[in-house]
Image 1 (cartoon, rainbow, N blue to C red):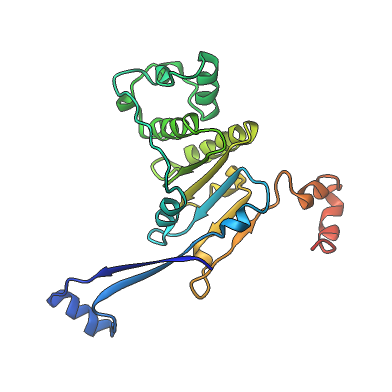
Image 2: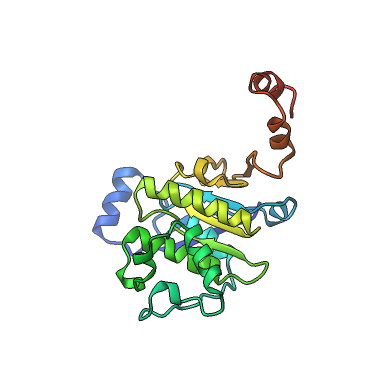
Length: 233
């Protein structure tokens, strides 16, 4: 399995020496963190639109995302114009659909500049900006997804995002420390860093659209699902 090994030298002092002695720390020269990576070949083996990397703070989510998005081009925006005017290469209808799809449907909000947006509005705008500037066939990456908004906003953002991404057949990989958005986001796969075993973890495929099992379940009556599930691998 592919992995990244992060090493950082320790600048020792009487405080670090105190920790070593109190907690019987043997490695006193550097810190070492092993971050597992999703298998790219596996991700190319099936069709998907939405993937999410989840795990506690410090588990390596941002490291993985930065590794995957090498070569990504970040396009700057103009702080002096209202956000409705920032996408110069799109039609008015396309811009409105994009913002509405991210949950930015308030006309006064669309007429504000980036620095005038609330935290929740800014998070939705940043997401719209990434999606709207993605090149054809390019995977979109979003770190700390929903981390600056309250949980209700996070769930509505997740639901709006998954509808837009699937409607336009795009690909996006998100990173988050919040697990409550998964049911609203309905990702096609999850890379859960909290499930590491011996410095390894696996891509978990979920049952959603374009999945044989999912389509099979859709044809069943509710009373049949429980008994039928036992016969499906």
